Image (tube, rainbow, N blue to C red; front, top):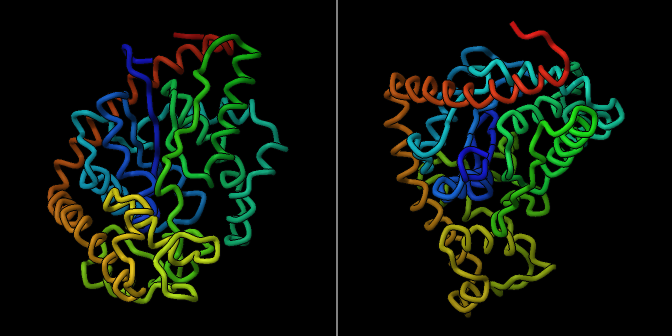
Amino acid sequence: MLGDKKIIFSGVQPSGNLTIGNYLGAIKNFSAFSEEYKCFYCVVDMHAITVRQVAADLRRRTYETLALYIACGLDPEKNTLFVQSHVPAHAELGWVLDCHTMFGELSRMTQFKDKSAKHADNINAGLFTYPALMAADILLYQTDLVPVGIDQKQHLELSRDIAQRFNGIYGDTFTVPEPYIAKSGMKIMSLAEPLSKMSKSDTNQNAVVYILDGKDDIIRKFKRAVTDSGSEIRMSDDKPGINNLMTIYSCFTGKSFDDIEREFEGKGYGDFKLAVGEVCADALTPVREKFNALMNDKAYLEEIMKKGADEAAYCARKTMSKVKRKLGFVAL
């Protein structure tokens, strides 16, 4: 713990445009943590290379992801914003944890199975072991809480298992992290297939609303959103399309599902889809404007990267010093 504040860590891969699922389920909530917690938010570029990347694209998206963090409300003065590859201790601890992670544990990771199926021509060792690097990202900062979606819980469980195993062998070394799962907006679903999670890699552009989409595109996508039989705007197990739209509307407006049902009583799906599109577009317009201004000031973004890397490296060194001493590595 730094001072008396608990520590939060989260990372976002710079691999494609971020969606309103990333925004509502994670990034939008991050700014609220900064008063109460010491927060580390990382652009995890080292994780991105488990899949082949075009160097120029990866560089650009690294700047973009950092700019999005700030545009979505993360104040660089109150949060440590940095790029993973700028802090070599991530790779260093990643190797140590590789040696304390069991083959069977890694082979059970569902994301490894999914990515292996999608990238059958490049099933590399990094793809297999990257949950140990993810554990290193978290444990390096003695993290207390990790904001995660339900689909990432398995990786956090592994991080906890690795921390407990290491502590059991060498004595108290790592804080065992707990998951922080937001109550609303945990899982935003596809607009085209509301039983599937909204994914930034979806090939159907109408299924996904990106944080940086323009107002007209956002409203058009919501107008085309798949809905269900019937015409009532209400939460129901047999209405996955409307449930998803109500969740999105609730996240952007702060209204309860009961409030939303009353607001749209007697109105049809068309009216509701337009209303969801408008509140989404209105909320994202200032984010997009701030993002564009930041991307025109690369020097400022590099200044934030440098400051964040220095802050993160200071904390990481303290953990690595303890780890090396416990392992028996000779200090110079």
